Length: 101
Image (cartoon, rainbow, N blue to C red; front, side):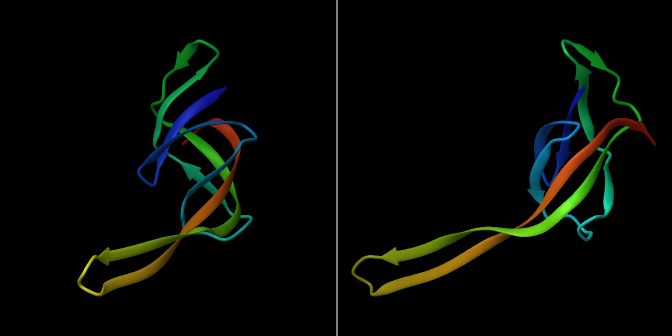
């Protein structure tokens, strides 16, 4: 069975046992969370009703992404700005799909 869930403004196709990296969610490693915003669910080619459907997940780790360098320059004005950013991520392991509220 698979489901498409929305979290952090992005959509993910998940199945039981999958590991996904999402925007930072509150919680510590080992905590269980429920993803309530299920957009689509199904098995094979047939679709299931998503009303009241949740996806259970376990937080594996809280991590940081790769560093992104932001460099601004205006030529002939001696203007240079260098900045870096590391996005906070949460690594989730999907434990079950279809647990009702």
